[in-house]
Image 1 (tube, rainbow over the protein chains, first blue to last red):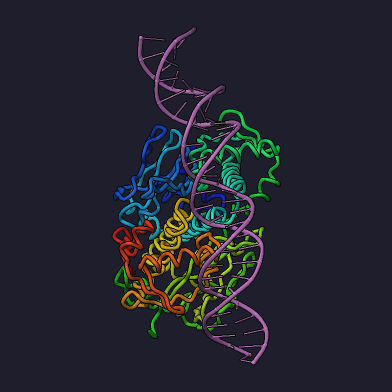
Image 2: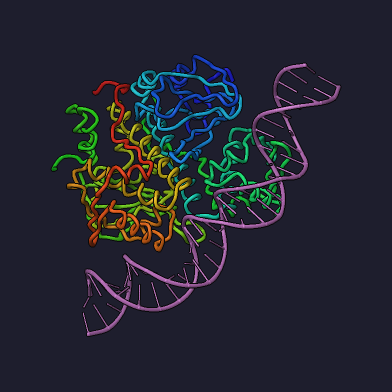
Length: 243
Length: 243
DNA sequence: CGCACCTTTGAATGAGATCAAAGATGGTGG
DNA sequence: CCACCATCTTTGATCTCATTCAAAGGTGCG
């Protein structure tokens, strides 16, 4: 745990060299704790830093002219937050702490050093960015072309799958620190309708709830309803050799 | 034009070195023509190559279990198609030629060489991948949280903006080789409702149509309705020096 | 010329939004 | 430790935007 969260994440895909581990560790020299609700990056402002998530939940969202909000993605341990800073001067999205979080801030130039010194890490970053794009595409298909129930199922599947990989979902149960309003903003639904869909899932014996604890009873059905595809495995065979 | 389309694209953001230009040119040594409707990459199959678009329109889409289709993105000259191949063995999406297209195929390992030899190009690829993610996020917000009319406006804005940069939109007019069904699949609407929304835009004197030609009469209003943000400029100041 | 595909329009239907109000929950300060 | 207040969840009733179903024009290609 003293090690780098990002290295931990990437170790799922490749065996990192010593030099690579050192380079990644240099991104997590600092540490910052923020409380629930804190805004990490504001839409349309120029952030100074990117962050690696050490613990807690965050989300990135956009607020539209009509006042409604779309949550793009939730971020967990090992995720990089603020990637748009690598392509745009001003952040297109707001990043908010959903729970208390621990973040490791670093500046872009530090990432440039890593890329220049370690081509395989550059390739891994490209793969991560591409995977993020694919994940958003899955969400897009869900919101664009499926029923309210399937959208909620899909979100739960995605979160459950990601938490499982992180070892944060024990026997189908995990903490879901989201309000129904937040789930609605992520799925393009109203909080009221999210409530009805969650109830339907509970009544259908597909999930169980108590407080913020959620338990998946019938994973197969949940995933099938949601049209869910697992994308946990990253392809690394094409990447340049480690340095 | 004999040069690399990708280099042409990247030249909008940075001044490429000779070595970088040569590396990029190596990705476009071959050339392939496909006719309208041809499938370039199939969902759930393992493609052998990525492609750089030289001319024509394509789209990437997903077909869901209920038979409906979601179009994720349209691809124009200079776009890289098949990027998911860098993260996944099997393609999560189908890529289809919307018009006759000319594509330059290349294998992933060739890209690995480019990354290893040219860190700034690696950084640019990361930025492009991130920009693609942001663009999908914009679409997601549009579909998740805005009216049918705003969704259509948003798509037209995005296409118009991208074609303008490519010099393919002359005085507000451009070819739009899409059926209303395709526009519906991109915006999460039915073809019938797309028709009504397009009609409303025409009646409102915001656009004009004849055959496949579309002319934007009131760009300001179109963009405002759509909540559109232009993201043409890429941030490059942080990137490692060219090699 | 004829067929396939696309566009256009109308009418009926329905999924999800909106409005409203009653419980539940939890954090805070007295 | 409890009371209070803010926030969140739950449920019902009604409304609306987009879908669905149906059918009549267009258009272009073989």
